Image 1 (cartoon, helix red, strand yellow):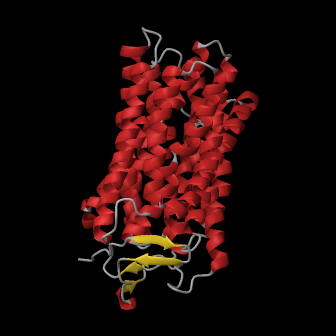
Image 2: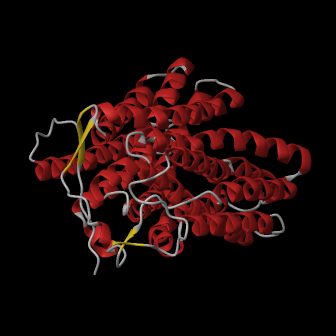
Image 3: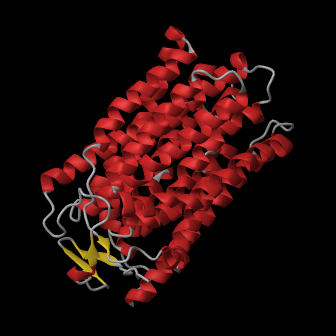
Length: 443
């Protein structure tokens, strides 16, 4: 049985990287089914940036189309399926998100066996077919199956490999590379939301789905052709069970779980809070646009800042600040200016885990294992979404809606983000213990 090398890399000095693990012997490496892997130790720096650009385009398409589902959701609720409960329609988006994140648990073994290129291109084909099939649907269960489940599975094959592949190609610029790829998803959310709305207004929802299928096939299909493995697979493969049971990965997974139980609180309820103080529907919905803009910039900024303060420290600080912001602003501030500031700052900080988690996992397990580890963490995140979204709706419905308040839902968001920060603090305790360093060190 193959073993994984557990690493901790600490940037105590600007130009010196200290690792607690010794490099693996060269003879322990073996090729995967990926005929396109790069020579370990002699990676082409120019091609490394090609990988970043292509991965950013892939997250731009998959996350962009996934995040634009809110536009379709409004259409389905009000015009296509007006007699169906909103809870039932919400299963389209929930199924998509859960499978996109949870399905990533299989992408590590798949990329080891088939290669990044094959897995990403397969995902592109599945996503394109799913949107095409969705354009011919006539009942809700068919939409859940195609636009929800099929697109979620296809996205898993694209998203997780795309977010982890740059870590195999970059060492010095790993933080920046990962941040750029993660930011692609935020930019895609803004662009595809606008494109989808224009298409719905001009050609209708069926042709809008077909157009999106073609756009994704062309962009992601082209980007996936350039994917290459940056480091070889360890001989004998990766010990999935030992990675999954590692206490450090469990701590990262719990952080992702708690983030995703609370992540969408402001996305769902801040516009409603703005409506309650007399803002127009357009102005209220613009708050989501401000948050998406914040996430785009924040994913790059978080990765950059982590080089100086440490990736784990960045996550602890980000989610502690987000927790306080939710509680203070949602309960004490009743102005649009305050809500805009909250939307921008929260957007910049709340998605830190997207760009920083691959850095943490690469430092802990090494670049060879990062895709498998990221898939497991994404499974934790998927469970968080599955628990968090229905719980938020139930809490608001039973405790806040009747009282015209946001107290209960604000405390839910606060608690989840505090627990996320504590989970990353546990990870830091484990890391400093392994390295014999102080808890206050840069890690």
